[in-house]
Figure 1 (spheres, helix red, strand yellow):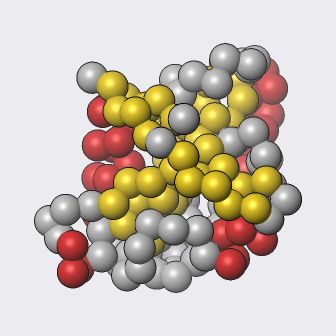
Figure 2 (figure 1 turned 90 degrees about the vertical axis):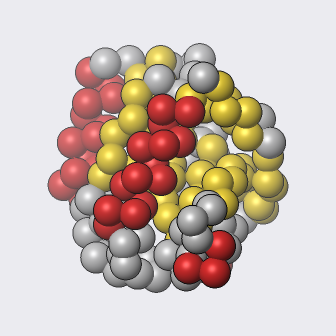
Length: 137
């Protein structure tokens, strides 16, 4: 189960709306070994695409250096789907390289607006498992 603050959920949704029609992306960091989502870090979608996201390699290298220096780890990797449901695509599954992370997808597709879908998944060795999300205040 993913436990995440309302503040982080709102920030991810807002980022997805600001970056529309492109997918947004980012991570949430936490202390190593805690599994606690503690610090949101929006990233730039280097693909600038409505159907694909990609962290800029320089930004990703800087992120890994930052988390090494601060004894943090990636707890959540998130991105938006602008025209499809909040479910990992084949590409999302193929690129999922953090087996300990929660993969959060948010969909703001037009047919459900103004509502959103906010879902979390574990992706390990190509196997996708949806998990419960607990939003805290």
